[in-house]
Length: 262
Image (cartoon, rainbow, N blue to C red; front, side):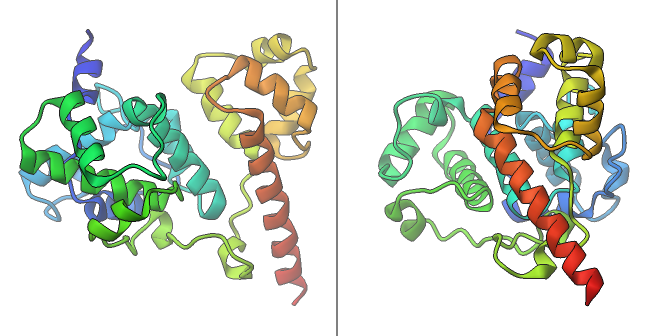
């Protein structure tokens, strides 16, 4: 087991509010390396250590504290795009919850606690902190949880999301204004994370390099056919994920256009 894998196994017992506020304070152009200089005296050494552990566990930084492609695309994201990205992060970080037969919409507090205990073998107080983080993370990612979990766990939803917004998507123009991010940007970072060149990727999915460039720049839309091809090469993201981002991007552009006319 690598050092990186060992660090990612460490349970998350940091306050979700602290974690979310840290992400919200990062600049859109995420620094190459994340270290204590980014929070200065805002956090104690103990809190800073737990924050770095959380970032590694969620695969937002690597073992050398370098920002991953996932973090770079997550920080500037808002609304539905951000929620979709957080869902992907959660599914990868908590496979013992999402990769099995567990029904998160019907699970009880006792069952959830047992799952965390059996997976990480932690002390009960640490376990409760980890579960609190998990619940708040799921709420931010719009992942449905059972009513027993949400009622019995008094986890305040943070008001300090990325770019200081954690609102759910609604019909408000303000939610989208200035936030039209092409789904191709997410694709670009995923290719970077996998060390796949755009030329190689174009060959894998059977479309021209020019088409890939157009998708990444936002000039070309991701169609249902293209989304299925993307899923074949990057199975982590199903076709519906790319179509969801494409729809969100088009709506954001339309709302920005309406806003500029007014």
